[in-house]
Image (cartoon, rainbow, N blue to C red; front, side, top):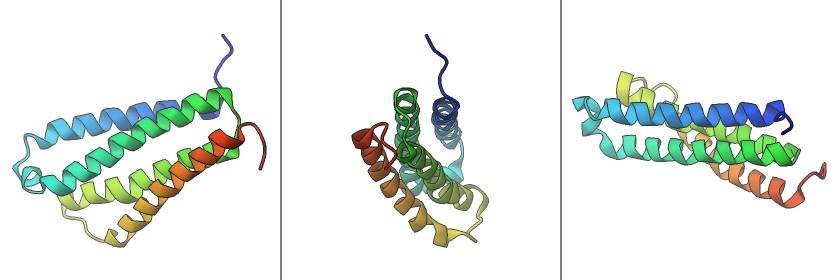
Length: 129
């Protein structure tokens, strides 16, 4: 079996780490009363992180077969969305840090664009454009 391209390995590793950290945070939140009070926001952030962790795994698996700039863009946008949306909500809920609240909608937009990029990458395959 040939070695996976570095881009595929990067997104597979990051997707797996994102999934693991979302499960760990979910378990920790079950024991933190402050987070239990903010369960709707926390659950939304966890659900988005988990969904996009699976998306990163899909990007990695596709990149193992197809080389597409659109797939790479999809993975980068999923990571960006996770930071701007999920991490931002976690920082607000856990540490009370609210300075980057304005970034949350940008994270959601990155998530939307990531799935459209993934669709383009899957459709176009190994083509450059």
